[in-house]
Image 1 (cartoon, rainbow, N blue to C red):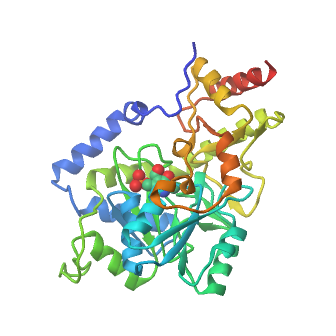
Image 2: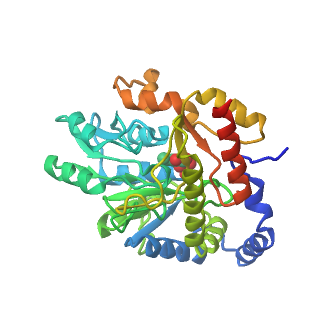
Image 3: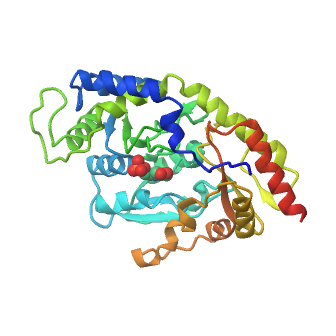
Length: 369
Ligand SMILES: Cc1ncc(COP(=O)(O)O)c(C=O)c1O
């Protein structure tokens, strides 16, 4: 039987073993493990790629959010509005920084609904942190207008969205700061945990830099404040530099995969598909995930597994406001309905066109039966 895994992790290594071994060898031979040239080179390349003034490599994107929120300043009880459809990390970073995460409902594209943001603003709200989910950037014009009207800051959880754009501007560059994740299954993934913060303001950059490296200053290493260790390893940075060189072709391939799925599946009334790659000129989506809703979702998932096809329900099927035992009391009915039916199909650069057609054939046969 044909096998189409949801994500073929070993191929991250086996497909490029020689190149990766060379990178590990040359970085290690120089003894350049921590805070060396491979890291600063990658930070510069990433900032250039996103057209941001600075990027700071960190140990993972969750640390990145905690660090930029600490740098901005969050007081106990300060509320920050987030999407109900995001990783728990978005909310936990706010909690760790001392604030209160306030999830709100999603809109037609499954990202935070700007209309719900305004309804959730209280006298304690200090900021909005939209998640640029599934490799798509929110309508940032509307979100920034709301923020300006209510004097709130905007930061972004862009963990899933490197290379995505709204009106030609890169995800992660709309607010005061943002995080990017390089978890192996991300569009730009390394061989372990890694992340980065994007930031443009000079003073905020200095603070973020200090917090991620034991409070030490970027210019002379002098300790300026309390900090922590959340640095991006040089070997991972060197691997990310290498992969960033071919990143645009990776994005193009993912958009091709999405196009084939959309063309093949759009006639099925039982499915609601993501927005097609060229359907909305304001958005450039990089398809970190191909997430849709499907009638009889659980049965479909089982059927696909029997046919050797991997699929995944994002966040294990739990939206942020479903974590009642963590204190959430918000109602998000659109997210609830979405989570009854959502599923992600294989979306990566390892999948062949034949595999995609096989997945689509099986989905068609499921709904015909
Ligand atoms: C939307 C979102 N935010 C935050 C994170 C956390 O990223 P990391 O694993 O690098 O901490 C992820 C990772 O999956 C994510 O998808």
